Length: 465
Ligand code: HEM
Image 1: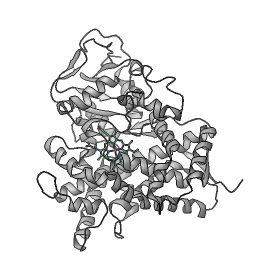
Image 2: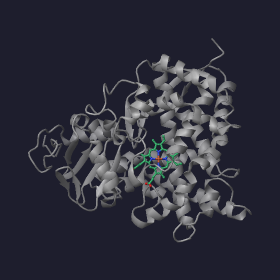
Image 3: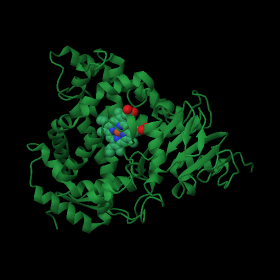
Image 4: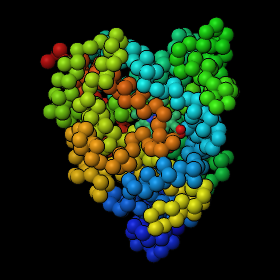
């Protein structure tokens, strides 16, 4: 079999053009593995060395796992970076050029305009809507027969976080078809792995792949549906205090210009796409990990019992769950919902002794960084006390990147953390979660990090023993 695709691994300080130290895979197996789960195609060295360069079909990618160099890359040299073409191929048909996919001045303008919508006071104003969505899930689980039925917790969390995003973005619009909208978003995101794989193979955009037609139809439907929602909102007298209202009223702080309609569509869809599945994954993995660690769950429940607050009436209560927050952060270390951050150099980028030329890919493999042998003591061990304030303060900030870093750090970070705490505090005291399968599911790269085969758990009301 010809060795057409192979990985080269560089020691720190060595040029990527130097001797190949390891050749780990041949093309057919790499491709099959990439499609199954990209992280399984990563060479093992990515977990033990600060810099690794791979070569695949003539294309070089440098993986950065040293906190110092991540800082240098994502903060100091951020202007030398641009979006990866494979990310654009996967996302742009639905999300256009919103704040996640745009680059340069168009990105800066949108980011500046959107940032105030995600400030802590705004996030707090969304807590009642988050609590109501979580309560609706709780009521559904209590009301359904049988009361201790087995459910796919990831699907359930997707539904709950989708309800949150709808309530916080387009509240009070009873004409928005929530169910078909959610299904279209899933259909769209579900086929993006193919687009990534095809871009890596240099295949032109017209090359067909499974789910392509459904994905294209979903993108058209999503954009049209958001367009109609905007038109309905414009027809109302007041813009509303939700994200759509804020987008309609937003003015660029420097130019004073409002956002164009296409830009509002791009960004509403971006917030739905970037915000609901990632948050659902953080929650689903948390329920599954807690089922493995009853002693941690007991501490979390004790903290929630002591809180004794109604989150609808007291939105600040979620700030008083420090241990639960540590648990969430540790779950996102082991299972980062966004497991890979990708960039392309648009100008030469310095990384220690080596220079990555313009045009090459530079990736931060967050999943590997969070389990890196040089950065974490017993990396595979679940230990929420790693995030106790003194231990967290002693660690390099760039060793832990569930929300990225630098100017393109996740804009929804505090919204997502608050939302997770509110949903956990509503559901965990009410139900026990008993996994159907004894083994932890494999983590699978699907742009996000999904539990392979879903996450089926028995949801048992706590008062039924
Ligand atoms: C646990 C939940 C979440 C995780 C793990 C997460 C993770 C991330 C990461 C790693 C990035 C940086 C990507 C990069 O540098 O290429 C990012 C960017 C982004 N996230 Fe999140 N996110 C979450 C929730 C949300 C929510 C709730 C929203 C909005 C409602 C959101 C909106 C965005 C946007 C718009 C960007 C692009 C920012 C930019 O490029 O300027 N995210 N997110």
